[in-house]
Length: 389
Image 1 (cartoon, rainbow, N blue to C red):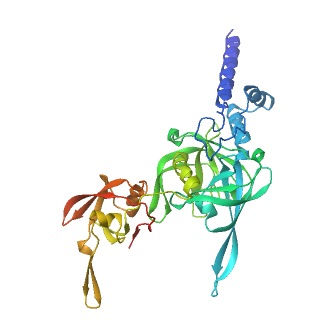
Image 2: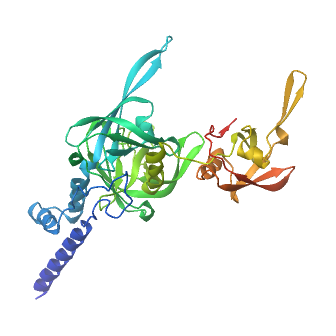
Image 3: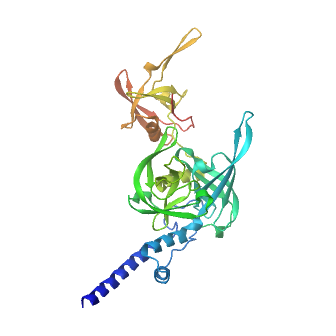
């Protein structure tokens, strides 16, 4: 009797596991409800595996429920991944001779108009960009727009619509530590390779450029290697939740720590890249700061810039004959922006460059050892980024 009951319990458990696997495979129609990328509605080009197909995988091929999910993610999404090869010109030697240099990376198709999402550093400085699709067809690509501070770029190819399979964009705000994720890309030129891992941490900071960090980076343990940059990070439903962008390794190979730009940041940036070719950010008119014990001392103001017009003070300049004397001690020391304390140029830039032209920010400075609030209306002019001296 006990053996009979045990066999029934085992059968019920197997059914429940199978139903869970089938439910995990119900991938929503690609871009059916998400924001459309480009000017026309994205085509539903990749169909999720049906319940019957998942049963076939589970029964006929002997796959475990986890393996069924893994296989379905790859089958549904691998055609959305492209290989990007570039040619740049480097000048070397005493005569600065121009020498071609090749690079490689990955990208994800985001529209049937041929828009491809990748990292800025993958195509930076490229004289020629070539994109290879899943079927081996190659196309020359043009840059649509780039955002170097967030390491995001959109390029475009002229390819037949039936060869383009846009990936579905997910919601990175739903990411949780421990979630299973899949990294797709072309590591070492090995096309459409998938690696499996979990989200190891959230809200990491990563310095993309000097004095610029992204605070919402996703950390994963899935293998990321040279060539993976620009490829999609997917959840168990095949939705793209980030761009694989960097590894933490002294030898430029996977060490179990990878970093991913969250897709919700990408969603905010891409529409501006499509419309303007760059991200329109507010400019405060401060080009240099010095890190001091009490905050960030203003070292240089843009002539007739937003900060100067608002009354912020840089070093006092006096002329004595042919000599120019600069008194840095007269400059304001920035201690916070909109009540948020800043101690590094990266923190300061992170707040300012998230604003738009016309936005007002309140800069709190130390002036004559006393805190003073100065409202500044940001301009829309493109100025050099704030740096340290």
